Length: 478
Image (cartoon, rainbow, N blue to C red; front, side, top):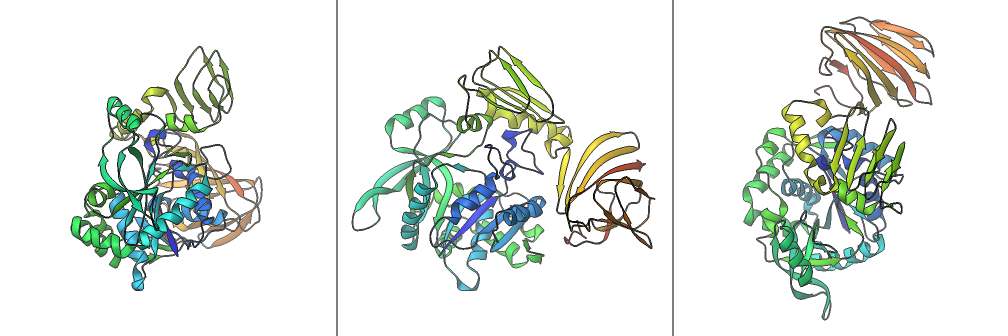
């Protein structure tokens, strides 16, 4: 059996302002389809023979969105492991491997990021079958993408001798000669011309016994920290919450640096599967359908004499005139304008926003919760207005605020309200007032989404002014 390990801890900062830390690119349908990149990854691997339930490693803040998106495609994970902090790919893979190896199990793991695009799922499945055979023989498989351009944004893998996958060396796999850092343009061109280099896709296959043995040899401090974090982890609903102190103490390192560049067991399988890491607006522009002027246009956009641009509008008219090679992204609270050549540098803007403690680096105006979502409509001194949506059958926690009062007006659906000792229903066009210091709960007992407007007033309106007494999502300590 092959056990998929799907890593969903990234934040996709190069795709800001659509992708943000609290709602990153892997949870979005960026390529125009019905499903998010994460869901497309799950659907893709479900078609592989001998595949088992997945192990998901994700950011703690995304846990309920991950669970909801899995439920939407009728998939149940083996485990969802929550990272309290990001520590790069090696620790994430290590804790997933420890989980897969519990009770003495030793299946082949298929490790892949949640945010990559693959257009030829059949060829990918065939490559996984080859990788499964090689991994069973005790090798560590990495998948290399056959390059079609001199790309400076990826690391490279140099092919060595052809590896024998059956009775003979058939060219479907190669020993790894070396790993190379992201090159400059001149070196990337030489890599492409040589035909011996592949893009490093960040996808791997191995047996836990093999990987943990190599990790013990080459990065024992990572293994020690991850083992302690896993052993001290606690169950939280359907999640495994790693011990924060132990995992935070783990050295941050990529699996390439920690293991693959040092091991003698690495084998690379070349792939031509329509792959993209969708890591920048340029790479997203490359994989999207474009018009005759090489433009991708989404939303309310008027373009006149525009060429080779990616223009996305979410909320208002965007008009472009006489421009080329530009990225223009409009959201409710931010607009990005960038040359397409500088799309890898959008993270510099995100870093500036973080330095200035700007919320736009972390959250959208619409924030998602396990019970639904809320959107900030307006705010000023001592007031804030939100639009709240509660999913059918869901409820917010029983809570209290010290510094703010809340006024709820039901717009659509029926709300069950607990306010102090009162328990009553509110219908459309009805409202209630929650004074500061009053225990309260909002619930949707109906079969359609509940929509209401919340007006907050008070001396402090931060999201951390909340004291939970009961919560069906286990957030009493959060």
